[in-house]
Length: 550
Image 1 (cartoon, rainbow, N blue to C red):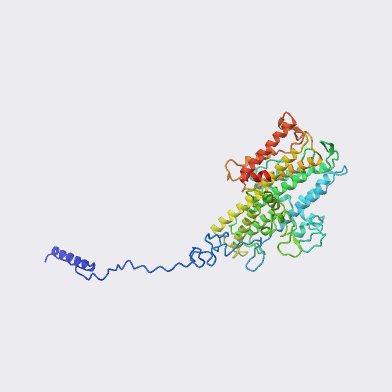
Image 2: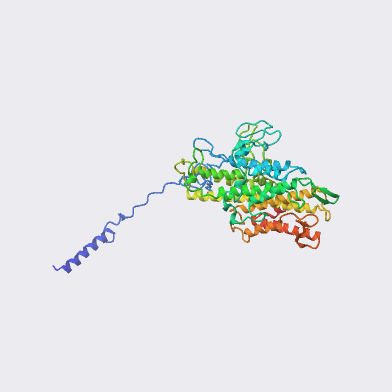
């Protein structure tokens, strides 16, 4: 048999076998064909959803608690329903030890408060020596801390009947000094541009009358010292000439006590909090490693220092706006009849958030600055507490990319809300200045109080407005609002000017804006104030009714 015939018979035989296997050629058609390559799928197991929230247990981040939204603010894999955020600013390590510390910031808050007390206690006297007065004020700003702490005149206190503690219990009439909280601290070396040049953002300080923030502070200190020795300053009122009397107020309508305090809140606390401590690389190994001999990581400590500069009590999240407005309202951490200034006191900007919330509470769209800022602050700090769980002094903890992204979001919310509190306060004082101007009697002040009110309100608003330039998270810096940039803030400061427009229409001794009459000058300045307020409303998305009523 030749090979071709043999090959043909082989093909016929293979085909027959194939037909038989497939039931197509006389085989047993009752037996199903099973493809050994594709096994039969088993029956799927039932979906288990213990809490009946439509999220299967296998993916549910709170198996026993319904949470359809699966919210997990601190990105630790456990949902907020079963792993809620703290309500107090209180964070501990696995051994139950606190990981929070910002006493250095509290010491500077006390120094600023003491500076204000000193300014308030000044009296005008021909016997005052301006150089000595300036030195006395610089005692709180820039005196060598070791010298100052050794012989500090006791100043800071809550009230005549308040009890407070520093590092030890103090009697009712004793007063707290910075060294009781954290020694060796000064204000001047932490003013924007003094510790790091790039804290003067963009390399340019603007809106003031000096080249740098610290030089601006020094200039105002020198001016208030000169005012304190001048007993001849008078202004004209509807009832006659009045001696100003108050040493910190100039005839041009500047209140240097207010300018200094409000500007330092920006150039020190707001700058350090946002441009410094909230702008670090929290994911670096050095910031995820425990500080030597401490319970906290370097990054968590930096974060705490921002919070210390914001100035809130650790119970801020459970306090009402009315309680926060009163800085030493209550002992909310441990009710022991004492207020620990290191943790139970509301300083500076933290109070302004509450004041603006109260000012909008009856409006259709009230603000909740206190709630927004403290929620963001607490979430961010919890993320860092999670990250340092396994950290040692030689080995860093771990901050996942998702956690780092969540932390950045919370920092931005906190920084921007802090800034909104300041900006809303500027709006508040613009409104006050307009009200003061409405009280003028023709080209005269109604009385001395009318003049003092104008000087106070203009100086507070301008001092705060100058501080808006120090945050990299600002809408004036980050291009987040169309049509708003750093030039918009420069415009606001130009519109406010370097002094208010007085009843006679003058600013810094000249008829404002070259107007034809005092009345025209006042109208021009009122228009400027409205324009400045409109820019602030646009930049921060403020509700129009709130802006009108703050």
